[in-house]
Image (cartoon, rainbow, N blue to C red; front, side, top):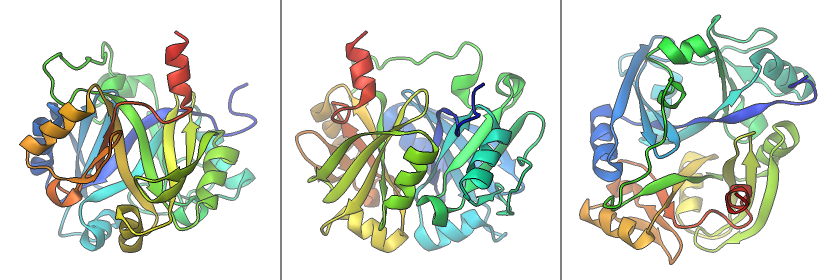
Length: 317
């Protein structure tokens, strides 16, 4: 039976971005990626406003904290500002996830919005459950989510990609950015061991490449996680640069989200036309300067990471 020997992750639900102005983020996504954002209901537990934005094959949750109530989200934006926050996975069995994470592996779990500890009973309701890991145990906070099909069919909170009839629309020939798929998410950490233990030993991820990333100034380990693989670059800064500065300012964090594009030079010209400067630019990678991109670090590349199992699958038909 599935889920009996370890945590079963199905695929990525979303990266999360903390932002002070959802309307400005809507304009950003429309101008840069040519896509619209969907408003989802206000979270009374988290005291925040939210939108979902689908870019290529990826759903991004944008969270804007309500300013008159102190919450974990408001505390984060008050201190850090606009920034990537945590990734969220779909799991096949949340009750089993609680057992695997907390009981078998000693990972502390907390409930969304309240931060209350989770032991035994998954938080949520009969249609959906969700929880977070404690970042001290797993490097950063990771979210896990399970929903019934009726939730995806009828609820305005639901991931647009999970609604009946949704299909990914490939970029048009005249799309200057032409984002085709999520390449990877870069996570910067002082000590990579808790995150790698979590992703590989507990979540069943596969390390497919290790080595220096000269563009970022990091020693990086590339991990594919989930039945529909999502790739994370687990990075430890080894010299001065944006990754080290981000780590020094924010602490362990999701640093950037990188998309595979059809033509990198065309994408760079498109960003320049929208007055978005680059923090990193090489022959194979461009990363937006967050000071000119609402705090976003979006990366763009033409090829998936070296050894990526998704590239092998695609090449093999």
